Image (cartoon, rainbow, N blue to C red; front, side, top):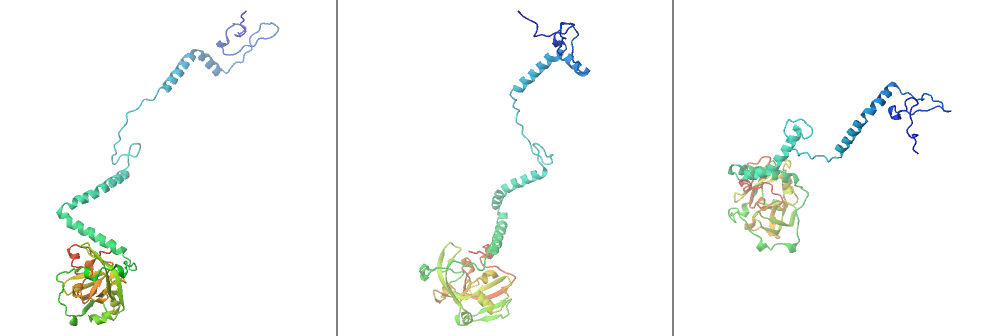
Amino acid sequence: METNDDKPKTAETGSDVAKTGLPAVAKSEGHATEANTVKPPAGEAKIGEAKTGEDTNAEDKSAAETIIAAKPALLEKPRTTRWKPGSAVGAGRISDREFARMSRRELLKVVPVALLGAFAIPAFQESLLKKGLAFSDWASARMFRTGHLAPTFADSELTPFAKFPINGYDVEDPGVIFENWTLTVTGAVNKPGDYKLEQIQALPRLRQNTRHICVEGWDVVGRFGGARLSDFLSMVGADTSARYITVGCADDYYESLDMATALHPQTLLCYEMYDRPLSREHGAPLRLNIPTKIGYKQAKYLTDLKVTNVLDKVGYWEDQGYSSFYGL
């Protein structure tokens, strides 16, 4: 038998709790009395009353929102952002400073190509080569170390004297008369004058087995003997704070050295090869031996030496575009 106990009603109307949303409490002993109810505040009562009319709409709305949320997000078409100088900084924007930095990077990428292209233009070739060579000489001079010695070799590694190549500037023998020969010293020195070979030979002698490298591409190991150029400069009272040493030769060849190279302990006023006096074809009676330099810096048939701060001429080959420092 069914009962209505699961649907409590009010004493007066017998309506469902759903009308008020509040449970009814009946008095005991069978007396029919008015239901004891807890009255909500006026505001809550109105909300409760209105709820019965809006529940369906609210539930439908909630279900619709759930369905929308469950749908996969639509893919947006990718956008291409254009960077323009002067644009405000923000999403997809770039500042003037960043744009300038990017522009510099792009410019650096094309510089090598532009330089190569410039070399193809005859009007620019000579200027670019001179500037590049001048920078190379400047950097090499800054890196040169007076105390750093060139490699030396054992006697067993020497190139035989007969196979030592002979290079000449103009003639193999300019016809120097040994008995009358002197080295004329001028410039920033305390004792200028003409110095005989015997005076140079009186200085401490150094013999060294070093490599001679020619700009033409060959090299040999030879044995050279003579006085250190630094000792000779000291003897003549040279101002070693000057920048250069220049030399002139009997065959009209000329050359210059920076002071650091002139003072290097392996730079010789050479008067011997293979423990014998220099032969005419190798530069007798006096030549330069500089194992830290390329071959064309090692002038032969010396007749003049000058200490100076100014170069009127750099060197025979240098004045035709070759390196003036050319360290090894």
